[in-house]
Length: 458
Image 1: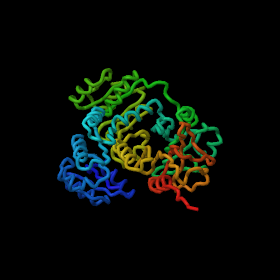
Image 2: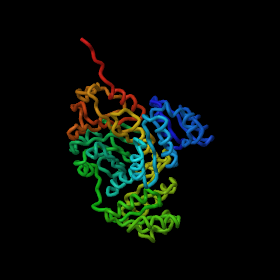
Image 3: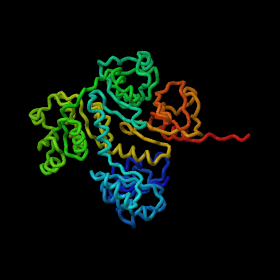
Image 4: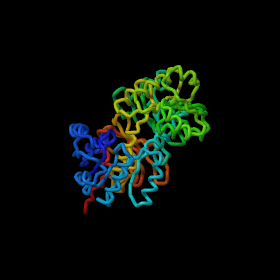
């Protein structure tokens, strides 16, 4: 596919790197000459220097030949204008735009009314806020990801040294009587990613991802030694970013007591007008004395959402030392994600990685329902629709040779029935199938699963 990416920042770079590896023809428009040189050295892509809002530059980048436009600059205005120009230049083109404004929903409606077709508008703050809220009442769980409209749940946890599962093989755990629809799908152990088999042993410090159904989530948490909080009472939020406001507003609706710390006085005043019951504190929320004075002892969660990754990591470690059981750190730099995990900050959110996931879902074949990337793009969960002609249809899973490093995590029938399968299960046409796979085998898996059987004429 010929794809034109407007903007050469981190989101554009990550997206282009993935898409070029998967055989797509990539062109990037970037204003900075220095950044253009960096992109040309590290990517298999055509780089065009100039503004993505310039008609001349877009034509130089051959916008009319592109099958898809991804507007991913750091300016909402430029992204929208780029989509408008592309609509005139290439009417049938698929368009994706990144928006950071809190008015993203209004812009969706304005574009619709004005006839500007943007197939996907990604607003990472609001989407990540929902993901964060799912894990606040479960201190031992670092992430909960929904699949199949929420019918399938994937939760992540770190294996503490005193957990009863330490030293057990997956086969032993299976004999211990877990919920029927339950499977350990991935193990992150230091720098390694393991798509596990029955003989693999859980070790202290492992970060594991477990797939289950919505109905069996609570039972599965108990089986793995995780206790949920009955209620989230108090939450501290560091930083006055948009995601902080989104989370605070939702916590207010749930009756949670919230304190938000922001160093900029003008930003404090603006946030205070946007929030109803949240206490906005003009202070350094990474200062231990400030946190103790404001009553951090006993808070349910501490959320570090500043623009500085280092501040977020340090603040999260401080909150952990002060006794907070649930800490969440916003991390933009990809290479910081595994480091934060090894430091004991199990819950991290990455807006940039989230945007890339949403874009990949759109770029890939039409039967890809969702894409979730883990850590430094080392593994993926892919939700695919089984085509009638797929070679995987109608065969027992144990008879299928999946690419090395790939397993079936769950099968969702068209009627909504969910199965976390074992070897005797089979995939039927129309099923939604959730695979867990190492990044290097993604393309092979998709090609094999989505390809049509060759018909032999008699």
